[in-house]
Length: 378
Image 1 (cartoon, rainbow, N blue to C red):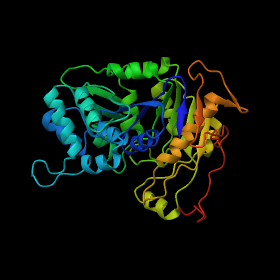
Image 2: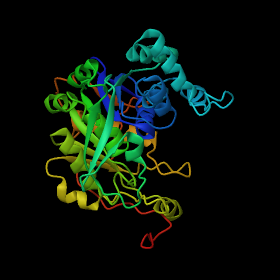
Image 3: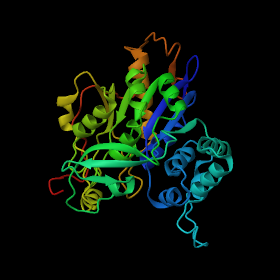
Image 4: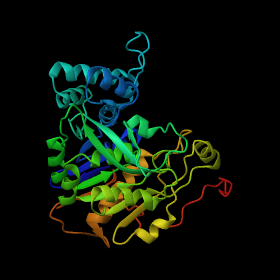
């Protein structure tokens, strides 16, 4: 599939971890678009956290995943760059790609330069940018007034009865200040479409939105802004959240409404849901979103990836739906191309050169049930 227009369509993504990796893996195969992926710099767990603590570098983990997703060498790059080292005692537990970014960063003296070199090595199609190059710690304030310091501590609750998150903010290191990486602001201004999510709501998505300058840039952009809703809740971050709770939080930190919501409407099978339920993770219910639509548009389909024993979005299904949204939102109205100054002579086609017509709904349908039936015991 490819998109044809006078100049490439500029798509910007905010997310993190496996969610952003999934989104970028699908978008990467659409021709004639320019992708810019913004990665959160709040991670302080695992290999990334050790490098951050021991060497004082910016966290490379999410940057690495974005670069791999946008590489035409993705399968080989994933196997090599995400390999966990074991032989040397000090290197044990580190990801090979994290070590490469760290070495490049220290050699060049610039974290963005290291990212650029990694992109060159992996032949990345698009750009990967850090939300900020300022060193900072993510802090969550809970409803009882207590605070939790560090992304990994926020992400994995130590107390099973921890209060919900009330607010999130960044604290600079060494009496410094925090600001968005300037190319990020320019990319927001130049974008045609901004995709927020999927990813952990607080520690990935909001962690980027609270970087000073980013919220203001999104508020003033002419781009269409879409929020991609997660399939499952996450204990400690979004426990008991419904679809409207995710939307409300995102829009609070954006300081504006999104133009559209993209979501999955297919429940995983009972066996898999029970596995997640044992970890206090639940399917995100979306029926009540209908009361909160207002002038937003909702685009929904079966986006579930059923290929593995894990609940996640399918990258190809998600990319297809996003293409359908582009055609519905900007191009086709009763079969006619809409004149749009940004998308002049733009057309969505498949390999047979015929317009792709996907179901793209504005009203929220009932959740599609799996063939194995009743969910009342979940």
